[in-house]
Image 1 (cartoon, helix red, strand yellow):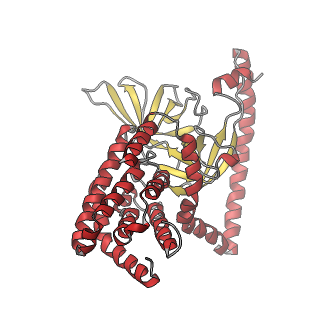
Image 2 (tube, chains in turn purple, red):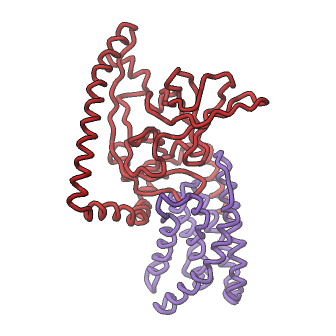
Image 3 (cartoon, chains in turn green, brown):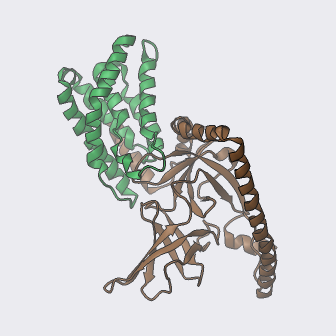
Length: 164
Length: 269
């Protein structure tokens, strides 16, 4: 994520992803709407890794995880583990993933986000009595539905601004 | 691979000890602008609402506030007499008078997005002297406690979060218990209440001050229902929190005079 050659765009979209992760509906709306939030940051990172694998550093992503942990009030290291794993998987198979149709990519997203949710629930259950509910199903589904839009918007931005 | 191992190690340390708190604090200073930006539409609409309100609206509001001040000052006059009487009686009993608490007004600047947890971000941090474990109130009652501090913001765990518990007593008769959160914003549960306990619907539940973390005598909620299952050992007592946990935008952070409540009382004179 070094700046120059459009690295600022990568950084900006990542920050937007973090921002979309915390922005919320008015308090008068029901609380459970929160489980319909796609995992924006993971989608954005996934896009950049399969498009520009040489621009995304594993350690940078891992450190980014700390910021996300603080935002989401999860145990430090949780999102580092998740994001770094997703980056590694995407980086390992980026040629194949890039050739996939958007539908196939949606399937991959579904699997990745589902795994990410399982890891989060597991980590949270170590030191907490909180109940865990539908987000295990809804977040992967919503992320899958959001992927084509994220993909199109970011692709437009990438080609328009010539980020390489 | 190494990163994954390191992550697991960190997660273990984080969930079993409190060693990483300074690190969390530094990180939250770093990321708090993101919360501020995310909350800005609500902050803005509040201040715009103030700007846009008309002259007559302001006059009405002003009048209502004046009436409120009159009412409150009448109550506080009574309070002064009661306080003096209470101190005198306490003196007769040989115990010391209670010290007043100082408060800091803070504004909500963010909500933790995870739907399973009830936590908010307020706009006062170490710069304002906030520290971990302080009780937070709103105008109606106990709101929560500070669990993480950054330089300009801190994170508050609400009383109804499933991981939160507060020592309480029934205002009417002093029956002690612990009010645990349920994870639902408008519901607390009194733990381990024997079926024979004298608790009825409508009882006021207040902090007991035991444990020294929360100051004594602040309202926590009102008993909403008492269900006694014939087969169970304990009664199921649900409490509706007094604080407007999902509405209040302004809260009070409580500063203790010095040390835990009981020692402060002993050392006061």
